[in-house]
Image (cartoon, rainbow over all chains, first blue to last red; front, side, top):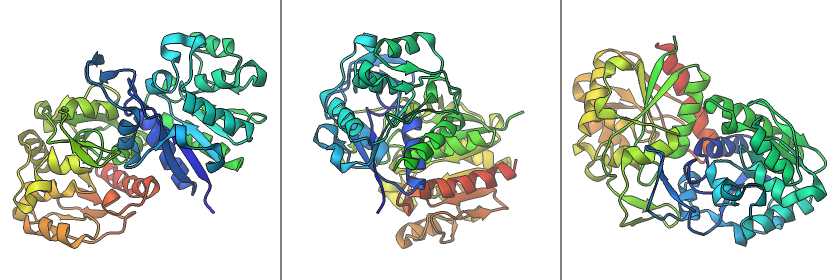
Length: 219
Length: 219
């Protein structure tokens, strides 16, 4: 039977939601690997809405789950209603949505809070020794949730400020090139820098292809 | 010097804009092929806005170019201001946006009107013998623009109703499987069914990978 992989989305567009190219390339490589994908998102208002042409916030309101459905091409499950028992693994694309809507890292750095539904699912998956893949800035929320007790080894690329924030939350940070992955075998966590470093979708895809291969090797 | 390929977007989300997975996979394979990509869209209101979670229209208004910038990760050029001289080729992803915002095929079928900026660019590229790749339902607007004079050979998969509409506009239709392309060497037009037939992103990617390889072979 196909392995069932959750893909945790945070909206649709890198400035206020999930990074679209990272999300789609994760779906692509998971589908190519024969996995069944289930898209998940918190059912709540986005922290903000940003005009991606101008790069500036606007006064509109949008819902994280409804916008995520644009990437998924259909129904996205409320992350608060998904049990770790239903999934074999989880992948979390980046984009500011991961640092605004899934947790408050963009505003609060190392003192960030994580959405309760996201926190429960990630902690339960980790406790069940099920693999977690995190792209771009999403490793920050994994660092926050696993904390100093698990000292997860991960990468957000090579940005010193971001790296020191994940270390302050209890993770061990390793620099990685855009097409490389950081693998923590003990915690079953795999991470790759994507648009923390990438200049375009080919580089993003190179990292995600390796991340998915590693994730699937654990199943 | 890298070849410069336009990618013509029509919003962000398959029910009211560009099909996101098709658009991203086109960007991915073009980038992997070493092309420089320029994203384009009409600068106008979307015909409608659809809640992709519920599948039903809502009363909001959104701008085609601003929403397209979510996929592009930044500035999208107004298609009306781009000359065929600037591009080596054009790729048009599908989604209802191609049949609502780029032309009126979704509402008017074979009698559809094409956005003037889109019509001028596509006709000028064709006249200059520059390649055009069209995905999913986007071949319908190519059929409309080239008409019976050029009798372009293309595919929208195997849907009989859609095929008969493109034939009524003057094209020759050939059935193709989801991972195959239809190639018109004389007109330099290449098409693939994508989500007219696909069950997921791996099938979409298989067709787009072939389409990009063919497109690039003409440059």
